[in-house]
Amino acid sequence: MEDGTEDLGRPRGSGHRTVPHTADLRVEAWAETVERCIAEAVRAAVESFADVSGAVAVAEREFEVTAATDEDLLVSVLDEAVYRLDADSEIPLETAVGPIRAEDGRRAATVRCRMADAARTPLVGAVPKAVSLHDLRLLGDSGGWTCAVTLDV
Image 1 (cartoon, helix red, strand yellow):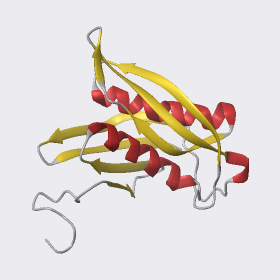
Image 2 (cartoon, rainbow, N blue to C red; image 1 turned 45 degrees about the horizontal axis):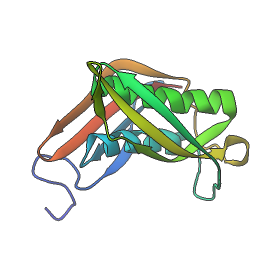
Image 3 (cartoon, rainbow, N blue to C red; image 1 turned 60 degrees about the vertical axis):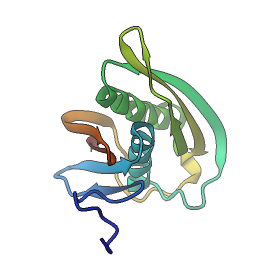
Image 4 (cartoon, helix red, strand yellow; image 1 turned 45 degrees about the vertical axis):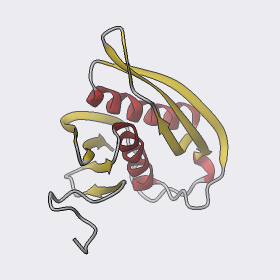
């Protein structure tokens, strides 16, 4: 289709957007892989409250996430981004997830982030305080992956 969407209504390639949600922040993301979809969700969350267009990386962080499901991994990665902002005043500029692997009956992944100093990054919206489990979605099929998550602001 000429508008950049496939017949199923899923945008092509990878990307993200925010969608209207009463009193909270709702983000949607899509990508060819689950790992990239999770990274796009982080990017959507960050761009909803910070103008990172001129931001410079001041640190690189690596952390492990483990969870029962891919949806729980999505929540864990977003929780870490919210935590880093609150505890270290850092904002993820770039996020790389994965690959996701099976580990002791759970899902696990290494996450790497290039971080900016939040004090030097203009805020343009409400800062997320927590990730909500309400209406959480992470789905994949032969056409790629999509996710939707609500963040409390």
